[in-house]
Image 1 (cartoon, rainbow, N blue to C red):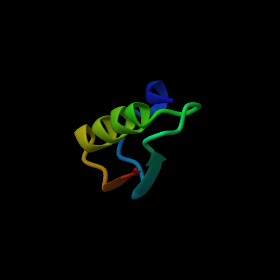
Image 2 (cartoon, rainbow, N blue to C red):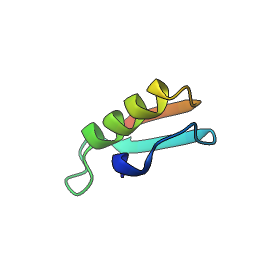
Image 3 (tube, rainbow, N blue to C red):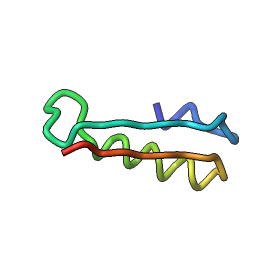
Image 4 (spheres, one colour):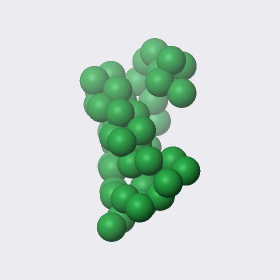
Length: 48
């Protein structure tokens, strides 16, 4: 998914569970970092 982010995206809300074994929160954090680097508005929430 990070491959397709090449320009500023619409505002994004990312919500991840810290105990999710299928989609780990670290992938959401990587997506957040990429979006922030492109000056997008991002909210990242990791639920315990």
